[in-house]
Length: 415
Image (tube, rainbow, N blue to C red; front, top):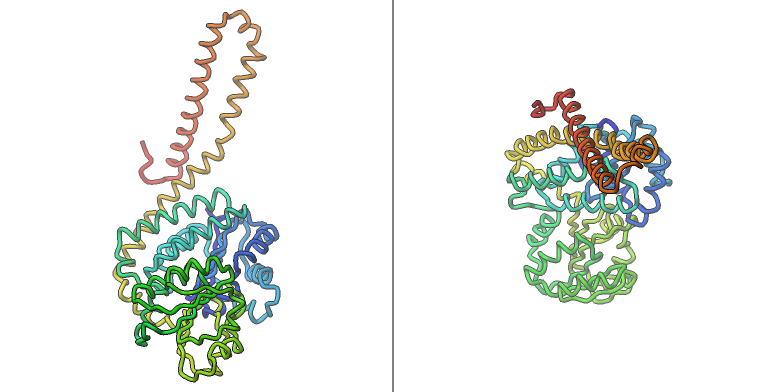
C-alpha cells in the first residue's frame, strides 16, 4: 500500500489565497493533469480542489522530495516565483500508505474540513474521482481507495453526530448575511451558477428574497438558477454594463483571476455611496483586493469564517473520537481488501492458462485417444473437464487468499 501517496495543501498549513494559487478549473485540469501524470511517472492520479484544500492523490514508488513538490507546482503554474514555490513546498503535507488512506477517510468525512460536519465534501471527492477517471488518470488502486473512502464517510455521517445541525461554509456565510438584517426586496447580484451558489439559493428562497440578477458564463445554466429564484439571467460578460445597482453580491466562480475588478465594482455601484455586502466564496477570490481598499464593503469570505469554524469544531469535539474509531476499523478492513485484490490480480491469468492447457490436452496430447470416442462420450468428457476447470480456478483463488491472509496475520482469517 506504500505506493499510495497524497500531497495536501489545506487551510491547516496555508492561508486560503496560497491554497487557491494551485486551483485549476476543469479545462485546465484536462490540459495539465495528463501531462503531470506522464512527466512524474505516476501510475494513477486524482486531483481534488475545494474552497479550502488542494490534494494530489496518486500512486508511485518514488519518494516525494521538496524538489519534486516544487517541480509539480511549477508544472501547474509556470509563472510561479521561487518564493511562492518555497512557501508551498515547505507547507505541503505528504501522506504515504495507510497514513494517506486515513487522511482521505478524514477528508471525505469532513473531520479535516474548515467546517467540521459539512457534507458537501463527500460529493466533491466523488465528483473529483469521476472527473479524473473520465480523463483516464485513475486505475484499480485509486478506484478501490475512493470506494472505501465513500463507504467510510457515509458510515461516519450516519453513526455519529458529526453532521448533526451541519454548518457548511455556505450556511455560515448565509447566517452572517442574515445578521445584517438585509430587507427582502434587496437587490442581489449572483455571479456564478455552480454548486455553491445553488446551495446558497436554497437559503435565499427559503427567506423569500425576491430581486435577483444572475450572471454566468453559460447563460442556460444561469437561467436554471435564475428560474429557481424568480430572477433574470445574463451572460457573465454583461456584468460590466449592468446598470440596475445592487445591495448584495454573491459570487463563486472557478476563475483563476478576479471576476469583479475595481472598475467593474465601481460601475455596478452607479454612484451609490452606501456600504454594500459582498459574499465571496470563490478560491481564489472573485473580488479584486483593490475593491476593499477603495470602497466601503462588508465582505463575507471563506477566510473570515475561520473563527466560526473553530467554534463549530469545539461543538463537535465529543464526536471526533467516535469518528476516528470508525476510520481505524475501516483502515484495518481495507488491509484485507487490498491484499485480496493483490491476490486476485496475481491470479487473474490462471483461468486463461488452465483453458490453454485444456485445449492443448484435447486437441494435441490426447487427440488420438479422443478421436475413438463417440459424440456422446466426448460431450460428457468435455462437461467433466469444464466442471473441473471451473472448480479448480475457484479453489486455487480461495486457497491462495486464505494462505496469504493467514500468513500476514489478518484478524479473523484463521480457520
